[in-house]
Amino acid sequence: LSASASAVSAAAAASIAAGQTLVVLAFWWQAMDEPGLNLARAGVRVSRATITAVAALSAVFLKYFSRLRVHGRDRFTQLVASPRRDDADSRPRAGRPLITVSNHASCLDDPLLWGALPWADLLRTSWRGHMRWTPGSRRICYANPLFGYFFGLGQVTPVSWGEGIFQPGMRIAQEQLDRGGWVHIFPEGRVNQSGRIYPCKWGVGQLVLETARRHGASPLVLILAHTGACGSLSLSRALG
Amino acid sequence: VRVALSLSRARLADVERTVPAVPTGMEAILPENRIYIPKVGKLVRLAVGEPFDLDALLAHHAHHGSTDARTRAHIADVIEMKLADLHHRLVHHPGSLD
Image 1 (tube, rainbow over the protein chains, first blue to last red):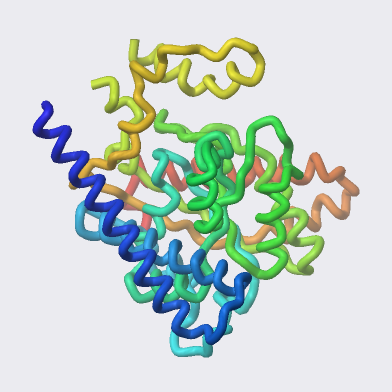
Image 2 (cartoon, rainbow over the protein chains, first blue to last red):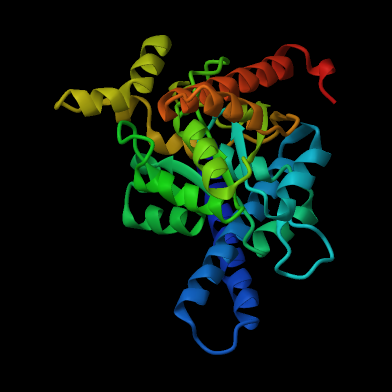
């Protein structure tokens, strides 16, 4: 038992080290484009570097350390990814806002799912800053300042149960949709390994309604359903 | 025990908010840190639905002068139905995808 525990902790330490190395490398490459010091731009670049590094790790895990089967990868890529061979300002979906919706089977659903995108599309999208924004539990993602810093860079906005559909974390997501961005929502509002879908909370309805009102066109909605993530990361596993 | 634990875990946030006493000892039984170490070699399946918009539904509610509360609840219900449908097909009828 202790041997397997030490192997697991060694693997965790190795992946953390790899992640940190990737963030530093990616930030360095991003910073190469920017002459002089501009703190606001530097923040954006740290964020993009973080997202790219996490996306790369997710893709490695999903593509090479899991068995992955995707139904409808083409439309997934077309909607989500930045277009190829255009200028750096080109926007996915010609700027039409996108809301993706999925079930929530494990704590790592969010970064892992995007690892299902083809490598080039995943890296291009995260590198150009077109990655999703997503509301995440304040209790978990913002449990301490370090987590908050990391998840903030990763474009996760803090939301809490009981604070309603107009809480700040949801306003930030709404602003991204107003700019034609991409917001991912787990509408069940919790991790759910029951095998059924829980009732969806109304925040997703408010995002659609308000985006249609402000943007003139209602957002595209893309449903993603997945299974197996709870095998990779089971809540009940810790019970033995 | 497992069912009872998972139930109490699902309701933990409710309990914390409504009851001033926070249950203790759960951490020892279900260490939070253990669940962040993923397992290797599992089959992960992802189904991507057809993209859609809710223009027709929004127009319908605008025509009838529905309140925002009713409109967004209806949108959430539609999304729930589509998500449940796709999830069901992925689990029970994967051949119907693609």
